[in-house]
Length: 343
Image (cartoon, rainbow, N blue to C red; front, side, top):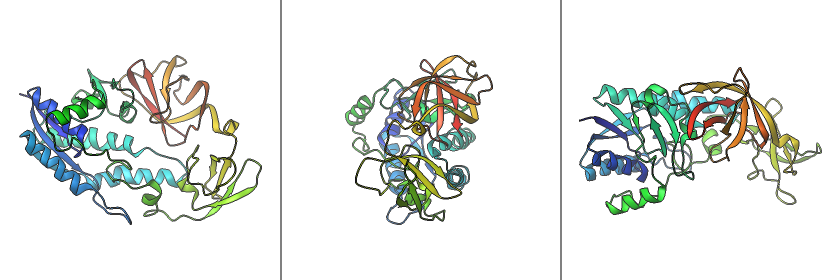
C-alpha cells in the first residue's frame, strides 16, 4: 500500500483531497506545513486555527498527522525573494515561489524522508506522467501557480481535485460531514493570512512619499511609496474625483508613480515583453510557434509566440498591464509547458 502525505492547510480543498486519497485505498498521512506564525499590526496570523483544523480533519478521517516546521526556509526562500523584487519595482508572485521552493521541494523531500511514496495537495490541477495539466474547473484552475513544479516532483504528486469543480468539492465535504466544509477560503499572501501586501511590506522596507504624475506631466497627488504600486493598478491611488487613473509605470530611483486616465493609453498595452528565469517542466516550447499564454492568475488566455532564445514573448494582440515580476505561463492546449518571469 502506497503511503501519501497530503498537505493539509486546514481548508476544505485539502480536506477533501485527503478524504479522496483515503477512499482510494492509500495509507494517508495529513501534513501541516508551518510556514508563518508572526502576527502583524492589525492582523493576527491564522496558523494556530489552521493547524488545529488540519489536525481535527486528520482525526475525523482516521489518518496519522504530522506538522513540518518550514518557517525559516519559507522566510529565506519566499519572503526575502518577495521583498527584494518589490524593492526593485517588480510585483512578484509569492505563491509561485512557495510552490517551487516549499511544497514541491522541501515538503516533498521531507515527506519522502519520513516514509512517503508520494505527496498530494488540494490544488485544482492535474499531473499526468509527470506533466502538468489544467484543472477541469476553469474558474478554479491553479496550474498558473504550479508551472515551476519540477517534472521529478510531479511524478510523485497527486492532485485529487483536478477532475472536479469547486461546487463538487464543497458538496462532497458536506456529504461526509467534514468539519471544514463551510470554512471560508483564505485570501491574502500565501500562508500569511488576510493581510494586504502594503501592510506586509511596511514591516520590512522603508518607504518615502513621492509624486503621482499623470499623462500630461502634471502632479496630481502623492503616494506613500512607489514600491507599493503595480502596473495597471486603479484602486488605492488616493487621487479621487474625475476619471479613474491607472498606474502605467514607476521610477524607483526618483520614487515617482506615473498614471493615466486613458484605458487605451499605449503605455498600458504591450505587444512584446522580455523574460527571465524560464522554467520548462519537460520540453521547452518551439520557437515562433503560436501558444496560449496567461500573464497573471485569472487573466484570459491569449495567443503569443516565444522567440528562439525564449527571452522575448510576442503577443498576437497587445495585452493590457503586463507586470514586471509576474509570470507568463505557456499552455499547449490543456498541458502546461512552463513559463518565465516578466522583466
